[in-house]
Length: 260
Length: 232
Image (cartoon, rainbow over all chains, first blue to last red; front, side, top):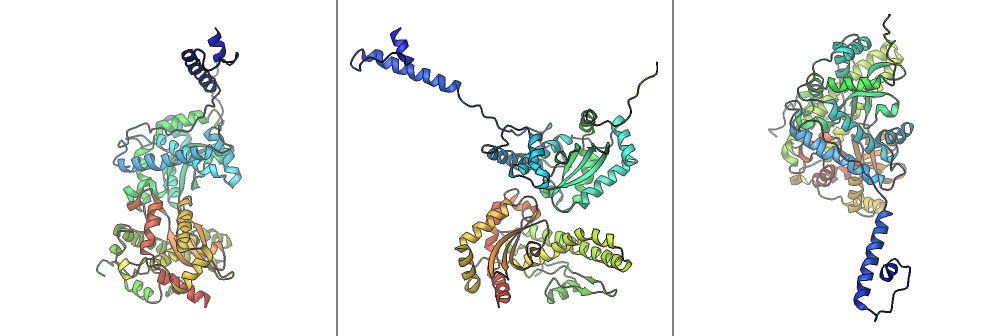
């Protein structure tokens, strides 16, 4: 009892000469108790992690080589994650979700230092999921209907997507977004790391137009890269899911109420 | 010499005229031509691979020249018609492609094979100015490398002379913006292209390695000449 009490620091420990063996045991126990106490009070810290694409790294061949995906995901995307975590260690944005970080960090066009890494982490994750092996072609059902409504035809949309991508000067992204105000689908280009999230729209699909995304496979031939993406890689399945979620936020038309 | 393909008469004449100057065409609209390199594509190895040099010159720079000429034609037509909004709308394409032509024309002159003096540090007036404005040559290299590596997206990093203030500065420009967009008094002494196309095939994502290696083929003699002319 006394041994236990003194281990908790309640009773004074006996003089060093008395019961030396017992004293050694008591000090070990004191350290253990103190250790437990400090562990219970320790701060839990969390970091962003790099999510793996939903397919093997060589699954997008021959339109995007394994070497490109390995570098693009394993180095570029990983570096953005590591850079973001390093910044968050001392940033007021620690604890924000990625979307919150992008919206706040954009700062109305004057991006804060954390913005670039956060947006690129998000954009690249969105990009990997926008693709699917042996996909492309054209969408079906509701998505096709919406595209035909907002672009005239799927062919028009495809042309506009490719044209937009080719007219982007420098690095950036080309997106299919659902515009909140106009309540329609639209193709937009953004420079560097700017995200439609920061501009208030709902992204549906994107394509990385930074040179690192296509230079190893296509060199300077951006047209071929964009054409292959839209014809063979874009995952209309993912687009459909994102549209369904987007429709929870944007009313795209009158509800169809059946007459009794 | 044998590797220098696409050396059309126009390009050779343009090179003789000093590279970036246009040739007058029949219609009166000046057309620009792709300047020739004064060294082989493979002459800058191992700092910059021959494959990159060839693509960079024959594809990227050539595209800037072609698109710049096309944009200038459209500009000419819009000005003749008095179409103000078309004139304004063309400005971004002109700045991009024209800037690309201007910047790359300087870039080819900034590089020199090791066998012809590339990589030799600056001497005399420019050397002293560097020591005065940056502390040491190594400090300048460190600053340029840091700014080049930190540049988000595509752009250029420059060693510039501020003619007004008579001081050297390290500046960066985005995309293909020429140095003058950062200050009307800035004269480019050295420019390093940090677009990914300038290094990706060889250095992949490791831009800092490209930056530290490019100093081995830097043509400080040319930079020194530009400096002396500007401060004369």
